[in-house]
Length: 132
Image (cartoon, rainbow, N blue to C red; front, side, top):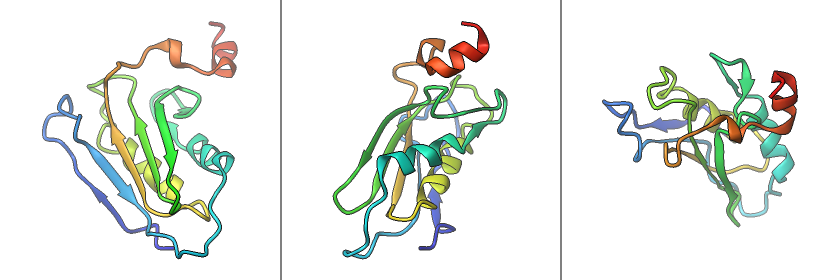
């Protein structure tokens, strides 16, 4: 699988991100076993928000994750702020991490700010670490 192949569409204005997508990976051959949801979540947990040094999954930045019948994966994610300086990087980092999982085909990561992220989206583990 060629995970180095990716496409990225960066908005000129980070606040206009409703059409922002990053893609990585290649379609799977038809007989390739698909990755488990746990494997995909593990890959998501390997991607850290560089400002908070916490992973995107437990930060609650992943709004939706769907694995299609052909092994492709769609992820809808957000950032902690619409003015995040990493708006052009984070979806790309997520797409590459998930595309590196054996049994994952093409990965599409779409960025949204609707609804806006709040600390209510933090995982229980992160809440305990932060004393919230």
